Image (cartoon, rainbow, N blue to C red; front, side, top):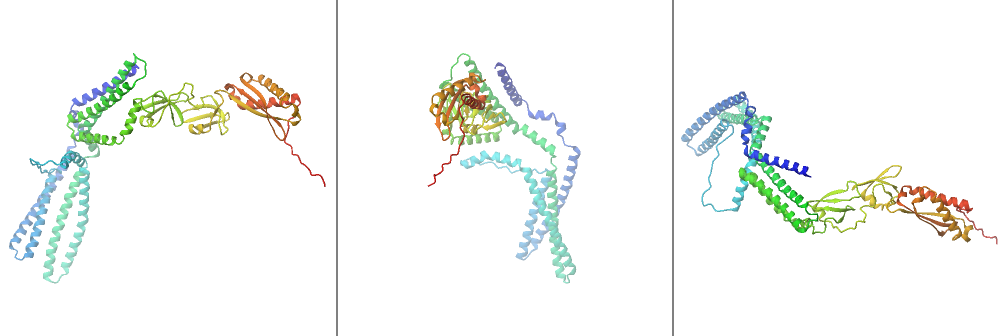
Length: 570
């Protein structure tokens, strides 16, 4: 016992040391020891920067062209006279302004590798309190964190959708331009050719815009896909996990476990120390103290884990933990009546009590101890120990028992006779199966089927054999006195000379009944349980001794006869 306790102390000491080291050591310094492995190949970085530079030059060229077109449209708008022409030019000018903004955003995205400046807004003072806004503020960091985790996959999917759209529209516009070019070549009117040229110019601009957008989208998609290789991405994810929120979760878990096991085994050591000076059953006050102490252990462990998250400043995990605790408390209110019943059982005041007898799954058990997992035992079964949760045991009922009560219909090495005619030796019985050696083969029963066959134990208190034997009607005058006594004497003397003679407890021969062809005796022999292994052999011996007595005294043994009565002739 002392050696086991010392082992437990060593384990918990290691837990506490590990937690202290992880709290003191800066994880970033640990990862910095492996900076040489974390650096990306400079050649690859330079190649990506060169591609970004070329793309920026293309964007600048496109931006200058769009600005020039905007200036031309503004000049045309000033010279326009009709309202329809002014509206058309204003609409085209708005589209070009939007396009210019898109090019500037794309330029910033390529230059900053996807990062953009976010607008910062501060809350006004004297804002009215709203519980909806307060609740939103509590959950907003968690939602933002989830969005941040899925940001890159969503961005890649968006870019792929845009790329597919542009890629499908470019061939359609090219087909339209080919049609316009062909129509212009066959046009005979100068006015028609002029209109087709204006139309071709607009569609050509549209094609250039789509190609530019397709190029930008393809470039951004390639950049996102090439941000990290699988190994680098995995390493970065693992590093981020263990240097940030993952470390906080690990520390909180270790503190929870350490606090729980230390406080738990303080109670174990205290009970072991007190138990050395008293040898009596635990009373209700002691059980109540243990129950309250167990609840305090859980509360202290949870509080210690939350304290780690609080001092580490991880409000996200702390908020999630508090939500989980509130959810657990809300759920427990529905099971409060059953919990009260379980507490009564723990206090040994419920329908199930320690050191009493209970029937579970058709088998009697002795309640050795009550706890969150209660221990039941059956001394007559191999492996006869069960560990049941308290919620299962709380639905049962126990009773005091007498020491002479049996715990099972049989024990191992007992001989049994079942209702289905099986006779044999019990070589194994466990809480699940009973194995019977039938001398020819082994037969297995589940415990339920074994009990349903009403096993007759021949070894426990001995057994009674009844053998019916018939004599002829010619012995009718002396059948109940002289013949009966001589038959009883002959069989009794014969049994005493047999190997099982010393196991005979009681023997008698009684007249049983008279049938159509014989006068029947009942041979009744009671044997000690040690003779159970020769149950059928003894039956044959009794029959044999009865036949020998008939031969010795010259008594006739009847046989079935058919008597035919003929009606006399009239």
